[in-house]
Each structure stands twice: as C-alpha cells, then as structure tokens.
Length: 170
Image (cartoon, rainbow, N blue to C red; front, side, top):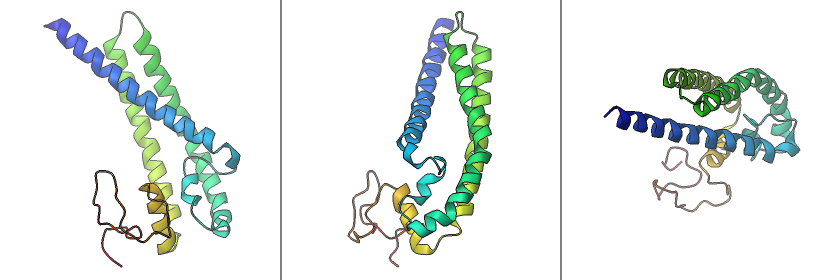
C-alpha cells in the first residue's frame, strides 16, 4: 500500500511540475513575442495592446516602473521553480524537500500575482470605460472592437455582446 501512495505522490508531483513548466514556458514565450516592445514590461504590457498610441505613451512610463518592481519577485519565482525542478531530479527523491519547495513556489507565485493584480487595477482604473472594455475584450480573447454581434465564447455564454463587460446590454 505504501508503494501505491508513493506512486500517487510521484505522479501528482510530476503533473504539478509539468503544469508549472507549461506556465513558465508560456510566460517565456509571451516575453519573447514582445521583444520588439522592449520598452514595455511583459507583465502588464498587454494592457496597452488595443489602446490608442497617445494613451500607450502616457501609460508606458508607469508600466515600466511597475515592471521594475515586479522583476525581483519574478526572479524569485523562477528560482523557486528551478529549485523544485532540481529536487525532483534527485535520487533518491526527498519528498519533504520537494513539498517544501512547492510551498515556497506557491508563496512566491501568490506574491507575484497579488502585486500584478494591484498594478493592473492601478492602470486600468485610469482608463475610460470604452478603453476598459477593449482591455476586457483582449483578456477574454474577443479582440474585434468593431464587431457588435453576439460572439461564441468557448464554454461560456453565447449571447454576451462583444462590448458588454458584465453580459448585460448598455
């Protein structure tokens, strides 16, 4: 029975590691994709994507400052992920150490998320309602601001109009 529990734990850790690597890889891909926009940090640069050039240039210094404040936490997150990876490769596997490393990774990831969410709110709160709708459309994957027709969303409400943030008509 102990072997089955150990195999279950190993599978759980392997799946968790795979998911973490996937998300770290996705973050890396997003950073590389935006290399041509090096002056805008990738953490919040997506907010600017569908905004007017004048608004982009107004917000860019603030986003640069936010990116600099997030950089140390992002570095901690990557280091914590590397430590998990290192511990997972050891033989014999030290399950207690791996679990402690996962706990550290979760803590750092949550701290990064909290800072990122606070900074996102600080930037988005400066936008006009229509600009916030464009940001929301980008976040939800519906990027055509001129299409006012109902649009099919994967697994969601198929009657929500593109410009409606809360699903209700204006």
